Each structure stands twice: as structure tokens, then as C-alpha cells.
Image: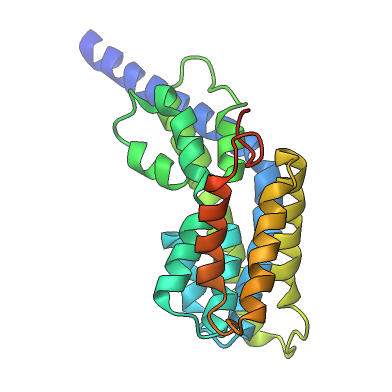
Amino acid sequence: MYLYVYAGYGYNAGMDQHVRTFISALRSTIPVFFGYMSIGIAFGFLLVTSGVHWIWALIISVAVFAGAAQFLAVGLISSGSSPVEIGIAVFLINARHMVYGLSLLERFQFFRRFKAYIIFGLTDETYGLLTTVEAPEGSDPEVFDFYITLLNHSYWILGSVSGALLGRVLPYDAPGIEFSMTALFTVLLIEQIKSIRKAAPFVLALGICILLHLLQVREQLLLPAIILSALGTMALPADENGGAS
């Protein structure tokens, strides 16, 4: 009898702790919800109005989960870019996530059940939360990080699919909505300039694009521009490429 009561109490206490952990993660991710919903809707709407079936909003958001890269992919798909170009561009734009992962190696070293998924879902916003928000006292940090990652991923999927479905039913051809991608990358560029505070990498990339354009490399400009810019940036002195001097 006592064993039964003790086991039942332990089960209920464990469930209560899971609920508290989930609620804490939910509260922490509310700002991300509003951001992901608005941007996700824009992505889904843009995808559908570009002629892509709405189901791809779900598939891409589940399997890729990279906001800026998904916007980039829409433009590349619409322009007829090759899968190789799309793959390299998406890889390079998300390469910063590898740095995020390296900074969390110590935090993740004891994770087991959800480690792979948490690494997969490590976006800018999720990284920001994982490095600033503490798990509730007595909760499993791995479960807390899993809930944050899962909730953020869910917000992005919900926003993307909602935008794609709206794009199907609204009698609006969305003229100019493709500029949202340009605006997004302009913001990212400004943030990079403010963060790096070095002119050389940006001047180099601009010069390479102009040179390729003058050489009539226009239809397949993206791939050689990315490769040459990456190689050129690595060749710069450490104090000019954004690294430590």
C-alpha cells in the first residue's frame, strides 16, 4: 500500500515538474512566437505567390527550419537556380550556426535523448534563449532546452503554413512581396556591418559582384560570387576579415 502511494506520488510529481518546465519554456518563447508568426506568414505567402505548391511551406519549414535561408531559397527556386547553387548558398548563410554549436558544446555534452534535435533547431532566436534563460529549479536542462527548441520550431511551421494557405485563398497577386526577401537580407547585412565593423569583407564582395557582372557572368552569378568572396575573405588579414587581430 505504502509502495503504491509512493510510486503514485513520484509519478505525479514528475508530471508536475514536466508541466512547470513546459510552461516556463512557453513563457520564454512568447516573443519568438510573434516574430516567427509574422515572418513565417510572409515566407509562406511569398512561396505560394511564386508558384510553389503550399505543401512545400510545411516540408521546408519542418526539414530546413532556417528563416533567412528559406527566403533565399524561394528566390533561387523562382529564378531556376540549380540544386547545387541552392545548397551552397543555404549552407553558407547558415554557417554561423556551427559557431553557435561550438559555444554550446559544454552545455550539450551530457544531453542524450534530445541532443540531435536541439542541435538541428539551433536558430538565432533559439540560441539567444538557450544562452540567457535558465531552466526552472529542479527541472532537467535537456528537457527545458528541448521544449524551447520545439516551441520555436512549431511557431515557424505554423506561421509558414498559415501564410501559404492564405496565399491560396486570398484574391491578391502580392505585387512587390518578393521585395521582402531583399529587405530581409538588407537588414542582415546592416547587422553584419554593425557587428563586424570592418569594411574590407563587404567592399571585397561588392567588387567581386561588379567584376563578374562586367565579365557577363549574370545568369549564374550567385555561386561564383559566394565562392570567390569566401576565398577572398579568408585571404584577408585577421584584423580585416572580422576576426581577432
